[in-house]
Length: 97
Image (tube, rainbow, N blue to C red; front, side, top):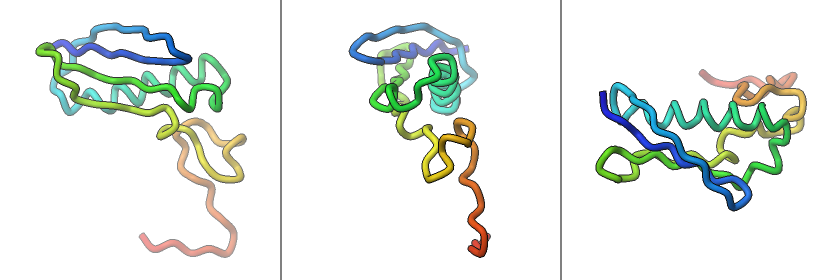
């Protein structure tokens, strides 16, 4: 299996680790998992909103970038939502689907 290097930068500090994945397509979902886990462990979503995880393949090419702000919950009920939960339904608003 190919190895990928995950580099997470938070507050100007970068941590890195390598992980084997089945394919480059798995890099972004794995980076999102890691970002969510880091935010939950820290407990301060807003302080990490400028953090980013970049994933490189074995040749050193960037294959995925995940900004922590992209996985933060949004909207008025964000404080009550879990990280990555879909937005709460608004009463009286119909959505097409």
